[in-house]
Image (cartoon, rainbow, N blue to C red; front, side):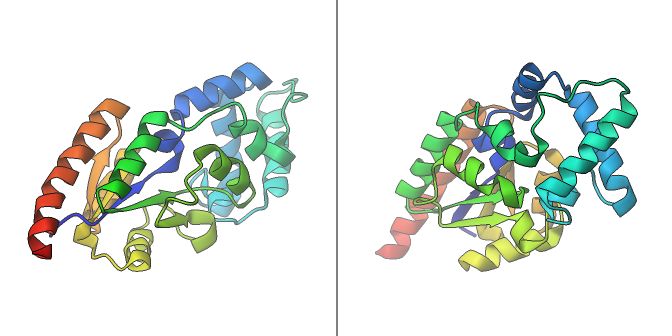
Length: 224
């Protein structure tokens, strides 16, 4: 099956790395990744879901989540200073210091120019849509954007891969996921997709350009 569509993850692929996002957040607020994720686990525990799921599946509003985060952080780390945290506007605070990964931005355009569908498949948050889509700047280019909070499914749930492929009318075997989480890549492969584990931009560019090179001769042959 010829590759017809390449789906880019947002966080850690089109955005800076997750480590970098947390590093800058700690620099700006004083709250570390360990502290944030501990609080996120505490907020998610009563719902019996993965620690990011409450907001990535829109089970909570950003304000509700933020209230839970403030409470959890204060209980887990008595005396913690939350004065620089703006949980009511966490998406803006989280993304505003950052720019799109230029290498992946350019690769997205390369995919389009090669005649393949270029799409985004992201686990994301309702209230974060404006800042993250503004940062990425691909609204007018993407053939499809599938966002967990809107479809109420999140990677690695196999249903989100079926939904995404159906959205663009491409068989599973014609889809490729680029993601920085191995579990998501494994789930995509189990759903019949191809997957590229994002390690760095150069490695991903090489892998995608190889796929484009394989797809183009077949497409040209089919057009004769």
